[in-house]
Length: 159
Image 1: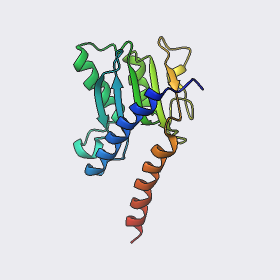
Image 2 (image 1 turned 180 degrees about the horizontal axis):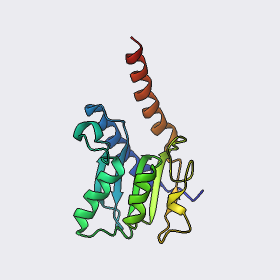
Image 3 (image 1 turned 30 degrees about the vertical axis):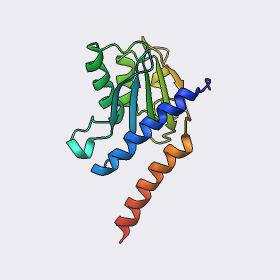
Image 4 (image 1 turned 135 degrees about the vertical axis):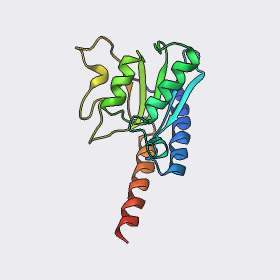
C-alpha cells in the first residue's frame, strides 16, 4: 500500500459529505471529489442513478465530468480522484480514459471492485495508462455508511 497523507484524509471528508448528500434521493451513498494539481476542488459527485434515471451516474463519473468541464480538457493530468468506495469496472475505465494519475478510495468492494479486489483495471499493465492507488482511507467510516444504508433497506423490505 502506498503512503496515505493527511490531505487524503481531508479530501475523503469531502467525498463523505457528497455520499451523505446522495441519501436525499435514495441513491447509494457514494461520493467523489476530483482534486486539481494545486489542491483545489475541480469536481464533486455523488451517485445520482435514482435521481436522474441514468445508469452511468456514478459518483466518480459525475465528478470526472465536472472536473473536465472546469479544466476545459478531458485529460485530468495531475489530478487526484477521491471516492468513498472502490471504483467499479465502468468507473475504473473512465478514470483510465481521463488519464487520472491517482485514486484514493475508502471501502473495498468485494463484489464489483475494479481497483484491486475483483479486478485491477487501474493497474492493468496492458492498458496505456496506469493509476497510483491509495486504498482504505477512512475505510471504516465509508463502509459503515454503506452498511447502514443497505441495512435500513433490508429492514424496510422485510416489514
